[in-house]
Image (cartoon, rainbow, N blue to C red; front, side):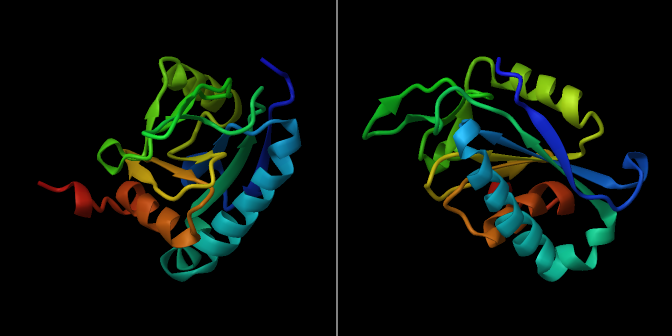
Amino acid sequence: ALMADSMTVLRRAGPPGTKRNIAVLGDGFTAADQPAYNQWVDTILIKGVFGHDYFSEDASAFNIYRVNLESVDSGVSDDTIASETIRNTALGIIFSGSWSHCWLEYGPNTETLLQAALNTWVPDANEILVVLNNPNFGGCGGGGRAHVPMGVDWTVIAHEFGHGVGGFADEYSV
């Protein structure tokens, strides 16, 4: 692994044990892609999600940590009807483009890689946002995790966070 990984505190509301801790991690971002990832997190998450509505009112409840993971290849693997491309990325997530499969799936080592990154950088994380270096739309949330490609706007993340933070289960209820 490349050792350029790092963590930046974007919002500190209080001690980790007293607040909800959101860890943002990127997958498919090379060293050259990191500024674009940082800009996306600032624009979509900080100014978008936490600049509007529910989350701005409760912003004092959240610490936000941006984790920069350096991938060897730019972009994430995809397994869509159009193509299958396997890329060497920090978390190994595969974009499927399939709503029924939540738009993405974890590769064989994704969970291990994700846990290692969290244990290293944000061991107290309660909520996880994984940003995929992929221009498409989509999103998958639940169980304290949300995963989105870069093509979404802030409302999608607010919605996906709703599944974890607010406990909403609208499209997943039976």
